[in-house]
Image (cartoon, rainbow, N blue to C red):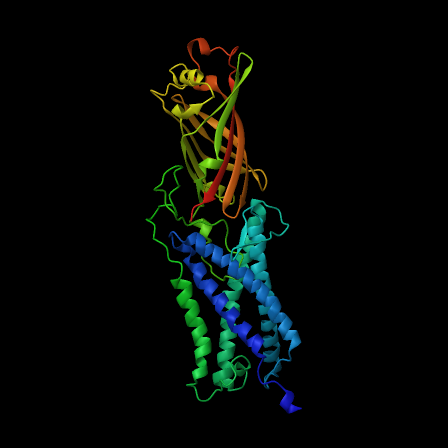
Length: 420
């Protein structure tokens, strides 16, 4: 019967053990680089989340193998030590599930799509609120610190004690043939190689162009500007992963910037003239958008409209709108909306609070809007009523509101792609 007693874990369990060891260490070192402000921060964050989900799945496979195959017997040791070893092993399984699960819960509090190596990963049914995100983020960070600062050091120190002090066969359970003697055994290449590769890739891959101190992760892209940067560093959350990094999450240093698709975007207005409906819009504008649904305090929007691009379907009327009686484009050719304060109503409804400068006058303006984000594509729509008289639009015979009402409805439909 002794021939049937395994001296090491089965090969599949060993492969997954070292693969997961590499992935977890890689995530730690990659996570530390969230402090680096460069143009590939967004890509690193998405990789971080994808690997976190992979670790979550591999943990269940590893648990299944643990039940499917007989484990090698432990060498003789004090009872307290055997109990401590068992407790630490169970704790590793719990943490390897709880850590990525807490990350998954955290990113599920956002409407933003969760990436898993290019595949859309489902959201968990949790409240998409700031408080829920803060709760899951705190749990994620606490579990990560427990793993990195306590459990991994204990695991490594215990293995070294068994190898060099007790001189037993514990380490051979995962590295067959790595006997306590001789010390110079080529099989050390496996654990040392795993750590070295994790360090090299964690600190070496996805290095973007460094940004200047104080510069955002990417300048907001101008609509219609062919020179707009092709890459931007951004993310929406700390990772849904098994990272033990104590570093700040990438969103602490980067905000997603957006390039507007003009072919799918419209800035329109509607009013009446002597009871007849008048509908129009503006075809020339630029938009600087740095927005993240979970970092509203850091989000900024600036939209500049070229008033000379007005089109209401009637050339004579458009000429009147451009004249001094209305927009007075000779003196005030632009309208500018700037917002630096945002309120989240629910997962898809927000309010942008800012100011509108039109016809040389600036007034506060709150713009309610809906927003959905999928595959790094944002779709937004908003409607607001403006009082044209508050901006002095319509002078002389047009100042009265009997022919043209004071209220003008403005509708915005926008489609934008996250800059990377």
